[in-house]
Length: 192
Image (cartoon, rainbow, N blue to C red; front, side, top):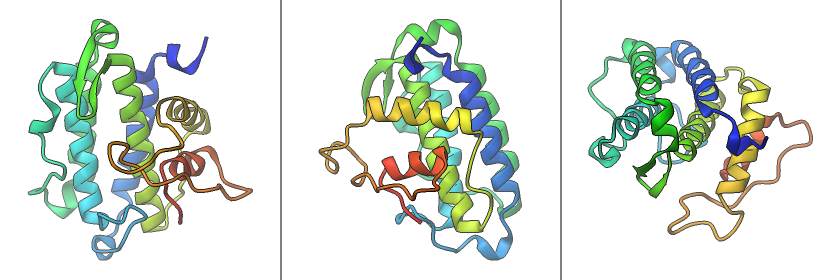
């Protein structure tokens, strides 16, 4: 059995639970801090994480994901963790066995549902890493989940070309002691 054959839903659940903990650990004075994702400060990154859960739900429900804005706004600073937790719970509930095998519309095209969920595992872990690094929290998710996501990402996201239709920077060579979450972030062009 390959990673592509694994049910991604338990990995998505683990990734979102990790991010809920990270979001709960953000201090108010960190909300305007920069992140390794150059487009986002911490508050904007939290808004984008909420969006990723809402888009995952939309895809699972068969609705257009691009109807959800890139960054969710209007959430009170104290409510980011609880908002994200609720949206992640709804996203998980949207993915039935049938949706995993169906062709679904995602922002980057039409893919099997299983591939879409793996993409949301990837995005959740990479942006979780961004959040952890920006706020000084432990930046490694469950190693088994991150390693499975890394294998899936390396299969789905080519090392080159990057940019344009492949919305990632070039892979960054990982540090010798990098864990699987950091290596996944590196594959997506992130560095500390």
